[in-house]
Length: 111
Image (cartoon, rainbow, N blue to C red; front, side, top):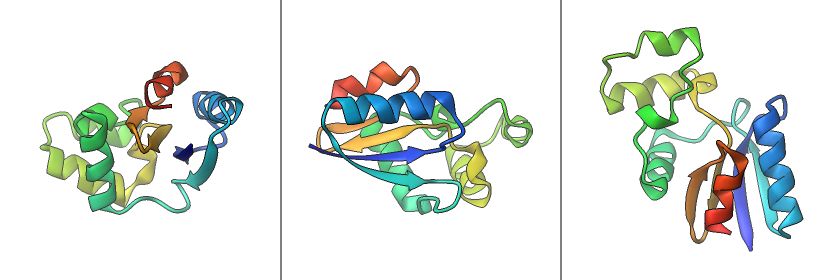
């Protein structure tokens, strides 16, 4: 099975999710989303595939996220593309769907 993980190697949840994918035998493509962020359209597609809104994919602990408290999904996506640290990680996609790996076990749903 092929899987793509939008990964931050400094994040423990992202590392745990990557280890889970590897242990499951997935052929994993790792995207360091801080260095190579997805396009706005790609990010919107991933959230739709995961059945979640951009707001649910927002890393709310970041200072810049506080400015988006009342923002529309479009504004949130724009902010995520301008500052990828706002994208909650890890985001995983397989042929069965997409999931935010919080907790990492959530990705088992798409393996």
